[in-house]
Amino acid sequence: MRPERSKKPSGAAGRTTQGHMARKRFGQNFLNDAGVIDDIVRAIHPLPGEQLVEIGPGLGALTNPVVARCQHLTVIELDRDLAARLRKRDELTVIESDVLKVDFRQLSEERQAKLRIIGNLPYNISSPILFHLLPIADRVVDQHFMLQKEVVERMVASPGGKDYGRLSVMLQWRYDMELVVEVPPESFTPPPKVDSAVVRMTPLAEPPTIDPNILEELVAVAFSQRRKILRNTLGKWLDDKLLSTDFDLQRRAEEVPVADYLQLARLAAQARQD
Image (cartoon, rainbow, N blue to C red; front, side, top):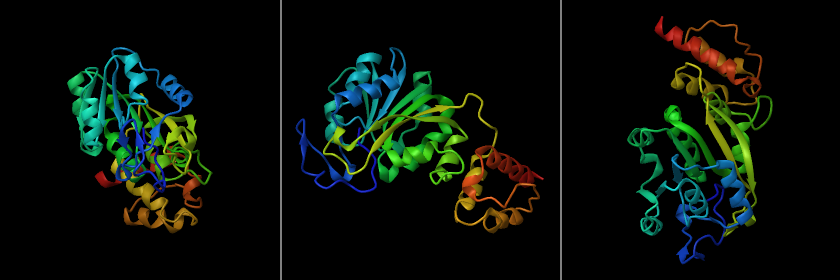
């Protein structure tokens, strides 16, 4: 797995691990701490017969102990040299592709089962991947991802704190999430300059019925100017929609619970139909 980070660590390119040169453009930092690996695998708890999919298996730090427990694993790898290595293993099904081009719903239908998805979401495409997976949450058992720790903290944040924002709302309406493992830089070769963490994302069994596009639009407007009260941001959006509501606009965006945003999204959808 490759940790997400805000800056690429110096010296990432040119270092060789297990005969593979870490490639800077792919953000490759290889997990090598046995204790941390064991903690992550125990958090995932893979079992035989489950349809597990790993994003970015790299040199197999997690692939090996996970497939030893579940017996078969599908891996998605963009690096063609690593993909070639992985294809030599009968217990792996290798999809050599950009993860954003993978049709996970089709993959689930082919396996006739819901998926368990694990892996790393690199910094430069972490949000796109999370949103790529959002529409197929109904075909997912759970997701375990390693990310930059500060991103995980934003994902699981509660209203009222500085970490609570657009990402919090747009994921929490569909998933129950928790930080399950913290991973320090020294757990990798080469070490990144940031701390990492693993988040568990479990789709809600009975998710709210909303239009995700409307929710995304109103949340983006609400958090466009965090320091201002919502009357100065979301107020204009409501006026443009000709939407009358008792929604409290005297709050700042980070003070509003997810449930309140969902209710407003329902009202906006209803107003659009009228």
